Every structure is written in structure tokens, then in C-alpha cells.
Length: 102
Image (cartoon, rainbow, N blue to C red):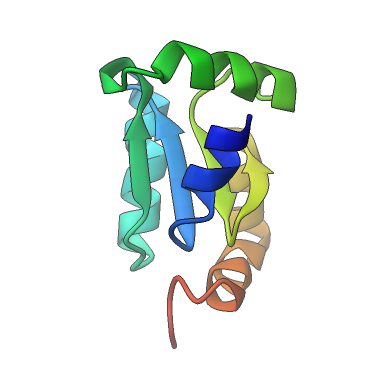
């Protein structure tokens, strides 16, 4: 679990994904479109990927990917990010985390 928090705190936005996950690709595309430069951790290419995935399950990620952190805070999965985007609060979170500037 400490590894997740360490990785999530290194950049304003961190996304834990798998390269074969289409929803992960869509979430990454959304963040790039919003102008962020997220840290992307592909669990299927990481030597600690299985360990991180188990820790994400413990954290409450169901499914485990994509798991999104903004400003070191766990936001949730794709449905949580899409909800924030639709209600307009995702951009505000990104501004507060200094992931984007207006």
C-alpha cells in the first residue's frame, strides 16, 4: 500500500492502468485532452504490478484499473472520474492539484 501512495504523490495526477484495458485508454485520453501530463503506471508491465493490484483492491478499487489519484488523493475508478467530469468538478480538482492552469 505504501508503494501506491509513494507513486501517487510523485505527480499531480497518477493513473494505474493495464495496457490491455480499453477504459484505461479512454481515461488516459481524457486527462491528456484536459491538458495534464499524468504519471501512468502500467501494472502489467511493472514487476510489482500484481502486488499493486492487490493493494488497489484493498483500497476499494473494483475493478482495480483504472485507479486515479489527483493531488495524492484517491479519486476512484473510471466511473468516478467520468462523474466528476460531467458535473464539472474534475477540472477544478486538476487546477487545485496544479495539474493544469487556466
